[in-house]
View 1: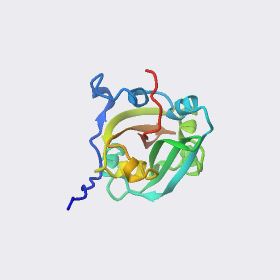
View 2: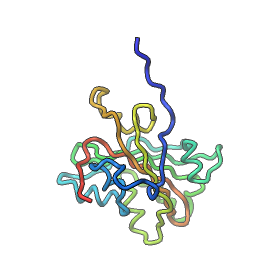
View 3: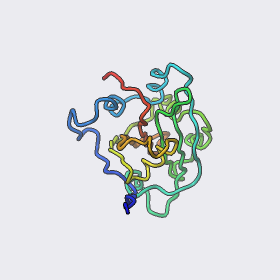
View 4: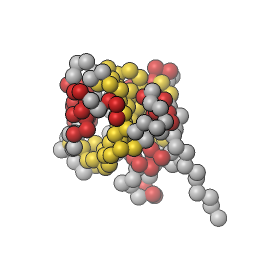
Length: 191
């Protein structure tokens, strides 16, 4: 009788600047290291119609390392938005955005009303948006984010490993965290 793997909440995130050259897989390394808008990069690489498919949006709690990065106490709620970035009908990226309730004031209130619009278009349209920290991680079937990202794939078609990055942004003076998990169909990209 085979045992089912135990899910752990999170992978081990590493600050991007501490990652050794060559230690990221060649196919996704340029995506992981891209300092610009992932949305714009995906739109440029997509020959078909690009679109955002919202999987979930509502109030939730951040994972422990997400809370730590956001500087949020345990009891604080976040607006949790999970989407897939699609090229045609093929999901290339799973994105999980956490916006603390305290960040949804002033100009940042518009973040709660994105619907199917890409978050990156809003963030990078404002020159005051700051990227504070970027981390990368290798995800496998033990990680909850892996399962959320691969939910559209049959179990037999799921890859053993996928890679992701997460970025802490300051938008309109408020923090938010964006996780971007690269799915198997994303094409390799030149450095």
